[in-house]
Length: 74
Image (cartoon, rainbow, N blue to C red):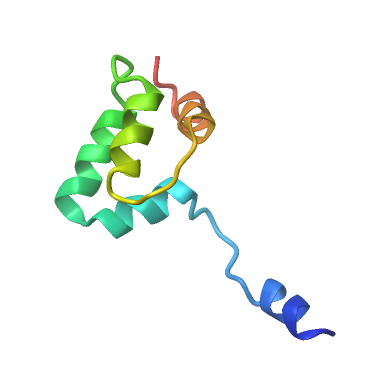
């Protein structure tokens, strides 16, 4: 097995999504604000994307849309 393949296989597998990682990175208060925004259908995905970009955090609007669909945010 090559070194890179070993690294790939060594990655933890779980339910940590990119959103979970960003929430953890933001800390308790800002992470809660992000989750509140994600569950507020009046806030457009692009607004969240731009706010995260201002903090040098990359996330696509499609990830937010999929998150909302899987969490029944109407």
